[in-house]
Length: 142
Image (cartoon, rainbow, N blue to C red; front, side, top):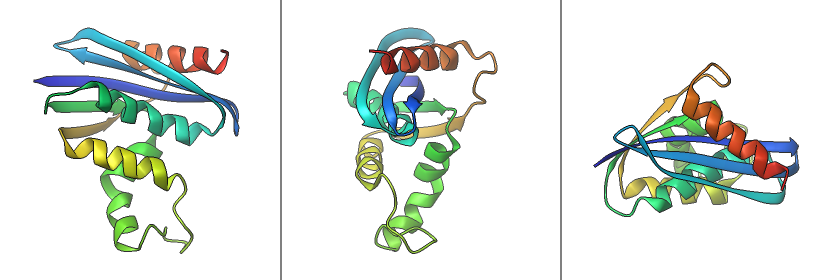
């Protein structure tokens, strides 16, 4: 099975009230829209929560393409995380990696599947990225 997932996070204030959302497509048809919120969080934490929660929804081992407009998430999970693990979760600045708890959850969620990460430009007319953004922003208002 192959799924496409579009994710986004939002924050009203940073830190502030946050929301995340994911659109999960199966054969280009929306299978799930999921979203949630947290009272006091950051935009980066919400950007990480979206793919974590989306991957939890897919029970069977699958090939998944995740589209994110967050270079922080894409670069973190595809590149930086390897160095962080080798350096005992310290960044290149020798300080503890921010959001380590969520990076570990995302890394573990990816192990079950074959995941390809793709960056998409935010607010550039991609309907599923725009929908994820709208849902994430709505969550910040709840």
